[in-house]
Image 1: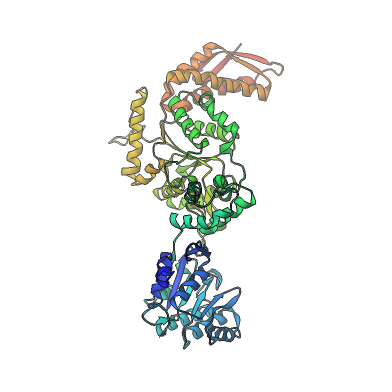
Image 2: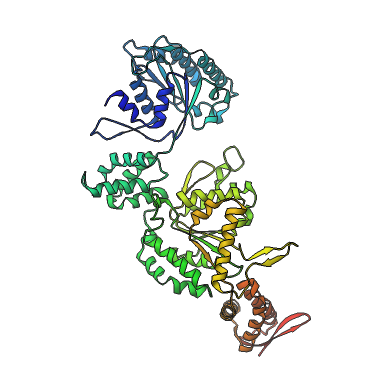
Length: 609
């Protein structure tokens, strides 16, 4: 491989560095700084995984440089390349006699840039030179103004290599973020800022190709099975660094995970849990009975239950996002529950959590009306560095990090600030979110449920709340009206069509509570009341059929409030007066019958028989 071919095969940011050698005496490098870099080698040798310092070393050597010094705040200076005259070693020896880390760096800057022979300097960990990038510290300020002056007075030298012009004795600053150095240094005309991007699919595939041979039970070279494995492995690691891919490989070797099951190693790396409950045989059996089990707790919503179960089936079969190239990182399922209030949206979410994860506590709820202000974003992901509480993390990111297998409900999503809604784009597309501390949290094992009341009511010209679709309308009319309202909200009102695109066809519309459903809810709520009375007082309460009819008649007048209206009816007509009657009951009475309900000026009362 010729030098020109070698440079052409390098990542774009390294080619940019090579171009800058003749034009910029100082180069600031940031971005994906701690990742591995793929360096090409002559065929058939695979590409080499190198760190950023090694990659810069390779580019400078290809450009013809023969003297290179690397410096970091921990180990100080070290020689990476030295010409036949010992120029780099002499500079390092002279600098080591200076006082302190910043004193050593000051000498290195002067000696490297002012050297009569070509020599370059890499300052690794430049963001760690002083605490919190405090440029006002006298020693640090002096280093920076020395660097600025040297940048403006730097001379170029002949370098035997492919470049046609002379090259600078370049100084490289490796920083976490661009603002870790002052604007008057990084913004100078002679400086160049180069950002290292996250690895794309092609780079991940090349990295996997160099690592896959060490996996247990890997297919033979040159076979279609091996090619398919490499492609699948690379696609499943979307959003991860090459360093992470190398660690996944080591994890698979350590846990004896076969190459064909590399997804298990990727999932284990992301969430740190060895077992995969989505592949549990018992879960598949529960999902198989999902329509029946969910229908017991959520009444009158067969269409919503059926759609939800379909998504659970898809997740248990490992087909979530199977139509996309990077499906492995996405949440296991996304549901958008829309419809009138009190029809079972939250109850269905709770029931799904218990059905899938086998425990009620695998349910996390966020009331998005509490996130209507832009600054409320810090509650979800944590405050950024420099703000109070930035070390405590966010409520959402902390919860998912601690328990990756759970259902997360975002209630009344339309009330959240649009800036906060943007956070869901990354979750829905990439299955990950970066918290205020810069740590990545993965949502690949979660179920996400959004709820909304959009499309049920609107405001008329007088500002009054009027129904958009009437209770009793056929379900197809309710569904189409609410779906259109959801689309209008995201596309026209808040200008976030991309969120709706990520949700896709997972909008589940709930119907109004019908009289038939109310007739089933009343005895269910009454049964809950009698069970509670027996458990807490030991008194057995029987409710007469006439009382049930009275409760239902009143509940039917409150169906605009859905199941909550039915529950409120049972509470006000039965629970409150029954509590008063039992409070005054003789101690030895263990059985009572509620024979009637009566309404008076003082409210409802029960008649006991």
